[in-house]
Length: 214
Image 1 (spheres, one colour):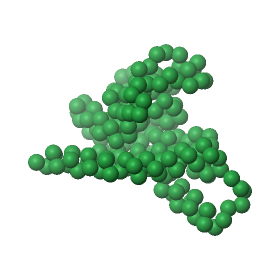
Image 2 (cartoon, rainbow, N blue to C red):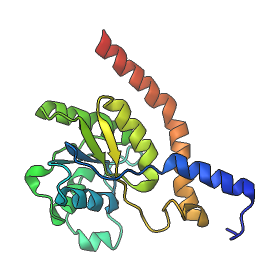
Image 3 (cartoon, rainbow, N blue to C red):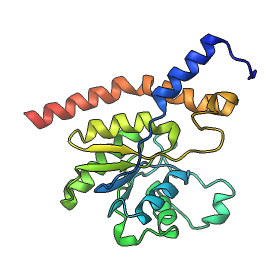
């Protein structure tokens, strides 16, 4: 992309950036949520926050992506760094967390979700089943995933105050995503996913609400 941008392009980039990227200063919370992924940056961020004493629990969530139907083999160099066999995103993220200072007893389990809305719903159900009150939660997601993750987790847990503490990845940060084809594909893909998923997810929210209020 050219270094010199038109005023229209700058406005477009700014609007997309302000919508997609959400970030708060960390505060004490009841739990740290980690949406499912084969990437590790957000798990490393969650481990950092746990070690700093921001929450007593970390809840990674995920079975595998709904598009694949199975947990894909890790790419290099992650495969060499984490050589074990993982059948779910949760199992992989748990290993990352434990290697970076989160004890097993502090890691809660959710290994059935296949996309972000299910991450949120099923994580809520895990806390309810364990009797863990969640008044304030940290959402440790990837920076480019922050808006979609926040929308879904807020919808699943409307009584919870969310603090978004994302992890950035080289090439996908708020000040650089638009400079490369990969960065643009990732961030604008989030806009597309919000558009393509929102009707279905909102219908499910309404159905869930109707079931609760019957």
